[in-house]
Image (cartoon, helix red, strand yellow):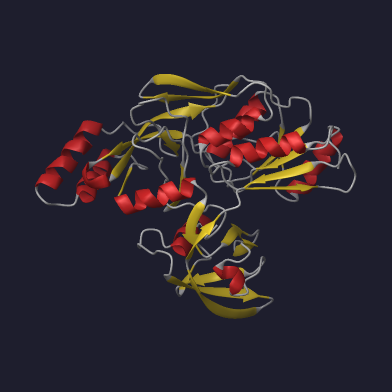
Length: 395
């Protein structure tokens, strides 16, 4: 949300003295964050992002030695570590300074610096405002859903990936903070104008719930924008509160990931225990399991698209492979590599690729994505509602 549903700053990290196990996803210079459950006193653990499966792991000792040498010589620890990562061929390996790390921690709690709008790519290739956060800078400036974004700070964005537009809106990589300004060039009904907005610290609404009809048995739409802290419990509570017999339409479109622990909680709302995913860390395989007691009776349809990534793909794969939901939409993005975050001298953090995660059926998502049971390129929600109705989930 500071720009689009892909709202977090680059590759968010975890909380606490030791870095938690993390799955995440990178969207150009913007990213989603993710965290697996942490074992007590665990060493820094992995997170996932898209990366070529042919990349050889970076030697963590090498990067730590380079950082230590740089600190001893009074040079930039981050620059030294980045040089090692660059030489390694690890496309998604990255190094972040302490300020960026603090931003990531705030992102895990569902807050971010931005202007309070979500964006999407239209069928004709333009970038459109899909949602405006009430009370945010964009809302106060009179920007509405449906407005087209043409320029940011005078630069055309129509050919840029939406994720890159997000990064520009947030000011990622420029040190932009709350109070900094960004100029938006917009078009509405053929009329062009510009607005200069002041970025602010905002709180996201990760999960929204609404009924799809007026009847007591009407299906319930649960939209998950990202798996920030508490999102899984909100999904679980929404399922438990749904009318008896009502189906669930779980909308994960444009969900760029989040805390994987939250995605597992969400999976537990629909599963009675069992496997959610497996992942490996330097060849050692581990597993994630749902809690028992989920609702296994009511019909479920999951909506996905090319913006469904990382933790959202993990949840989609679990429900699809376990036969718990019908998936509808377009193939998901395909981010499933595992990074190991390591603290460096001076508060910097390096992330290095160490493995991949797989769905319960053993499918590797990285670079492949998940193909829905029903591939639909237009009117996907309408088709999903029809499928849900056919499953006896109301309308």
